[in-house]
Every structure is written in C-alpha cells, then in structure tokens.
Image (cartoon, rainbow, N blue to C red; front, side, top):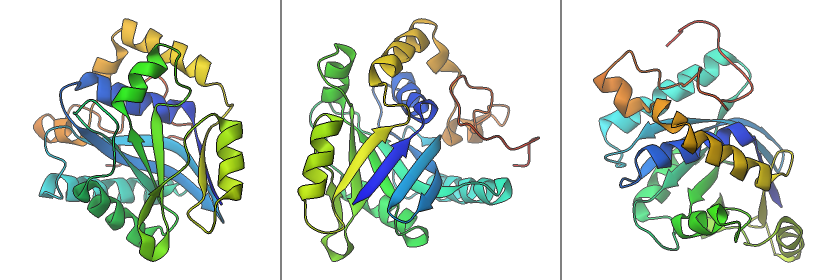
Length: 227
C-alpha cells in the first residue's frame, strides 16, 4: 500500500495556483522523498496555466525543477499535480497520464494529485474532507485512483484492496479543517495572486516561479538564486 503524506504548504500552493487562474487548467511538479511505499510531498512547484501539453515550456520547466531538486540535495521530483478548468468530477486525461508517465520514468513511486473542482466546492462548504484525488501507477494497469472518503475509511479500503495499486492520501498533521481556514484567509488577503508559475517566469524573469517568499511554501529552501 502506498501512503502519500503531503505538507499543508504544498497543498496551499496548489490551491493558490488554481485560484489565481480559475478559468484555466493548471499543473505543476511535486517535490519530496520516497521511502519504500511511503511518499512525502514537501513542496509544489507551479508550471503552466495556458497550455498543459508537453510543449517546450513544460519540458524546460520539468528539467529546471529536476535541476533545482538536485542542487537542494534534500528532495526529488516525486509527482505531478493538475487542476482542470472544467467543473465536475475529474479524471486523468490522456495528456495528464502522459506527463505523469514522464515523471514516473525517473521515480517509479511517483504520485499524481488531481484537484477535483466539484469536491473543492464541497470542501469550501465543509461538506467534503479532501478536495483531491490521489493516483498511483500500478505497473501494466496504469494510473489508478485511490479510494475516496474519510481517512479512516480510506485506510480500511486501501488495506482491503489488492496489490500495489492500494493507496491513501494524508495531510501532514491531519487537520484538513485548519487547512481550509488557512485557504480562506489566503484567498481573502489575495495572497494567491502573489504566486507565480514557470510560464509567467518565461514572460517576466523577475517573477520567482519557485515562490520561495510565498507564505506556506515548503519546509526546505535553497539559498540564493541558483536557477
């Protein structure tokens, strides 16, 4: 069973990215570490918001993220995230699976976090616990969605599931309610507008796509501006 534990700061950056471009699909890379069947995500790096294809911008962005992780010496690219523009239950599109496959070529334990806009609405109304779907790759079966539900239910279903496809998503600290409040405060203070993705950086190099000054960023930092 794969357990994916995510830092609240990484989740907030994904939510900020989607909030900044509410009419667009957005994507990015997940940084962290893998230890056996355990995947820890400590940061999210926003990449694109207009075209999510494997275009040069995304290819270069992923290469830069890998370089950044290598220089840091403490993390690696452990996954991919995406939020689709359409409202409703989401699934990994063929393109999303293709990008995720590219990430998984370097890290077989890679995970995908898909922000479900319908569940995000329910999450904001305190009617859903988790607004994300977790996908893990199960060999020849491809990318499989982890069971939905509350953490205790997910854990029970995951343990009852067969094979390596079983997985569960956990927020470090386990306080989704607190994260919801932090998301509301971030949105109210318009802090999501201060987050920049790699695509914006290509238009204006002054915009820090690593978002090292963004409130809620990952717990590690890379000194200086190495990239």
